[in-house]
Length: 371
Image (cartoon, rainbow, N blue to C red):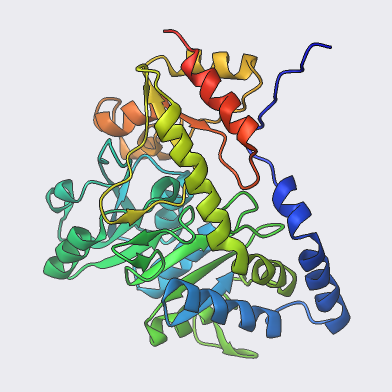
């Protein structure tokens, strides 16, 4: 018989779900038996555990990662007339949070090697309206936080981490979520630590900020029927908190396997047409996304897909060129590095439970590509 070619999906949850099946079912049963679904002991337990994991003093659960960032900005008093510095090569939720707070995004170019915002370009973008820097830890690697924090201190700015892709990532020995004034996390199912639905949280070591964020996410209420802010409804429900608590003890091991897969990609992908990502000094990458670049990205994608290798593009249009932000009037060519990443980036399969054979199939498919 002729051996069937190996198919490698871009992502699969099945290996993790099979391994944690008993724990996830027990979590479901526990919540159902307790018959308490919002702001209960599951929330409290997960928040305490995740704050401790990140090295922050407080964690406040919320509905999703976008809400986490919006709540942070609102709690910091950022709104109409204010500016927030942010990269353009990110998922739109990062920038939508700035818009939902009423502020204006100001885009700064990334470092091509890391894909993260370039600290050397930040100061030139600061104006009297600037109130914060949004540091996105893109693809699972922390932004270069020391110079960002130094600039922020010099100008009296807040630093917000968008850590939606960086669960467990470290910068000089400290975990994402403990590096800025506050951090927003998404627990969308595809994240390194994912819920079984939408969920998110904020981490911070500022008690007053944590209390304000919790109130803002609970209709502006600090206790029942007492409303001190014009808040919103964004809370982490008990079921998702229980699922996340079941997964959290396994996060480091799952991230370690991602790094093992990445190590094979780094060592064995030798195609000169493909530019591999760079792990920056002092960073421990968790490879939420393994992002390569290729001048003929679409041809590479077609080649891989025809060989049964799933791919994705993160993100094919930078935010400043999206129709949603046409009112900013930023023309094509204004942010060439962000635009280059958008035009050349391709994401290879990267998930917990990939087999050695699947990793080999990806490597062989990439290496067999000819421009």
